[in-house]
Image 1: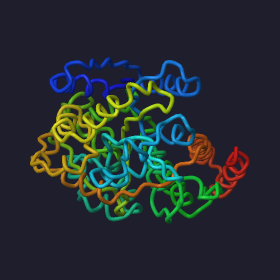
Image 2: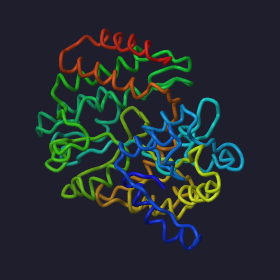
Image 3: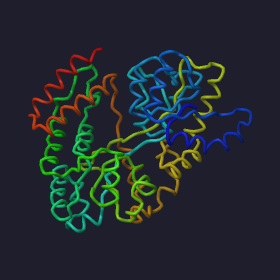
Image 4: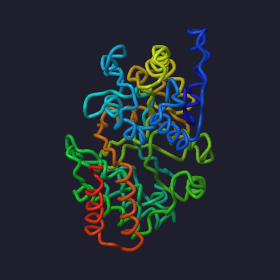
Length: 389
């Protein structure tokens, strides 16, 4: 089993039960850091050497792997995974389904998006949750009041605004950056609005200009310098356990502004098409054990904040329990509701490149005051050149 943190810990924690059921089948976990793991899997798939029996894939990388022919199509016998589709959150299963109908991975955890905010800072500014969530313009306006009253930044980086707004208003069949015919979509109204909102955040000095997982980002949470953060539901657990445990009780969770349901992260398990055929039946049995076993899905959620992709696991009373870090709020219910509203969008082999292009152009808008229409037109031209490669 090839994995990355914290998937490796989830798998290891499940091994005693697996060993009880299959005492003659040892599972060896090979763990690397996130980027190193996916680089190693890319090499293994392209060379058909060093292939693991089971590999974990993060959603940000799944699209690249799905575009090739290196992964087993689990919709075909003897797997026939499509028969289990309704057992999973719909969008997660769809994310692992290619345009041709192949199902190349099994979802194990998801990241329904949420808006985390500091109640103490809102109170000092005379704001309510609805001031943040009713509209994106209202969210920015609330940030102005927050900054004036508390000195805290509305969010970590203006890019966070862009990342969520471009995921809203997609039409059926549209990908994030490309349509079904590989035509770039980056001059569309959703990109224009995303850039305009990000620019408004920066011009009013509402972002701390820090990136996720940096020391400044962490300190911003610990010291009350960042008032809100849009992320996957898992972030609440990370804030509680190690990012900012001293802020316990001061945070609450809400749906994203304008009902912009979106996913932040997610993990899948896959089989390599050229893997050891003799081991595939047991490898797939292990995948089913990790993804379709209610007890295992709940254990991963309770210990590692890995929100279950298995629908049956979401009916557990654990979802109704109050979260002390969030002031006793039963926020898991809201995250479950968000997961039910999220819709998958088609991936494109150039999505990773497109994100780099868009981020570069946004930086030019934010830092050099480049005209938004010009920035998006320049991105469109570059993506047109790369779209069909």
